[in-house]
Image 1 (spheres, rainbow, N blue to C red):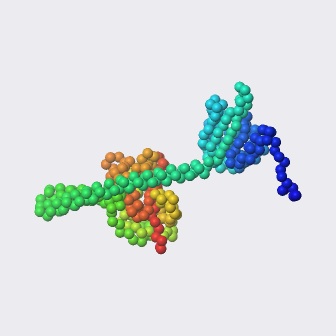
Image 2 (tube, rainbow, N blue to C red):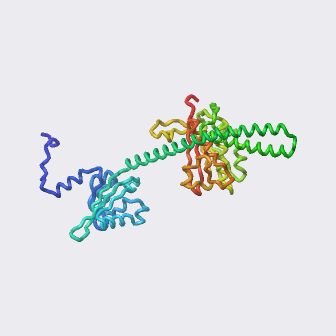
Image 3 (cartoon, rainbow, N blue to C red):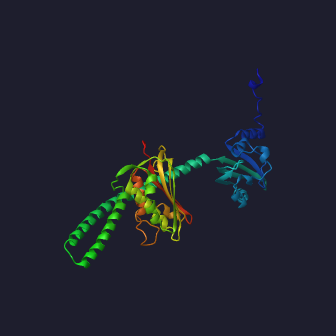
Length: 383
């Protein structure tokens, strides 16, 4: 019989230390090892090799703090964990750990003290790599948050749509009445008052249109358009909106596919974003308008297929938006500006336009570090 097929000699099941060694050395999904009372590694199993990348000779005799991030090691976290295990009988937690190659992974850690009578002689430490589970939970939380945000804005949109239609009907009566009065008077003072009232009514019409856009009740006239060409055509208008205090630049990716959108709504969206960025930099700053093609999933459909979108970003280095406010910026009438400096409908118009066009918006902002708003519009399948 070939040597490789010969049966292994029987293991003495009464030899408990031998059984324990075989058990520990057969485990590869867990790093199971012992530390002395000071935290130095004394044993190492195949699970430690697989998870952390160290061979026994590379790690035995070294302090286990090498597995922690530099920040936690400097803060004394490893020693505190050992103290907790000794004082409370066990320490368990999830946290970031470092492999031999410097990469980080999410670990589930358990530390148990080992006593000999009243003397603490060491610790038993078990580490499991839970990176895959952690990432899945993060993706699930992100999907749930995106769904919640989408449902919230959808509900607000339905309410806004009804109010906007009613308000529009009232404005129609007001404007028609002003036209009738204007046609029946020649008094200059009355005419000036009527003109002021008409300008206010026109402003109300504009606000109603923005509300309808947010609620997806505004009829869009879609046509196949080149985003880059639209931005170039509006460069002068955007520069005037940004004012001389702001350095306005364009970074347009060549060869982008066309998109089916409403020209006026897109131009209004970019103008709103540039104006918002300008207001966030009262002493001047930098605004960059950029375009690119990206394959992404709709936030409301995290399990869906990736699709090709044309992304237009407006990025500034202004004051930024507080984290607590970022989830509300697309709601109508919500604004971070001072009273009287904005209607709170600019970003809601952008959101409504992108949504009604089959796309979506993204906002990233850091207080003191600027804000970027991206409009994703689906690319034409047959450009």
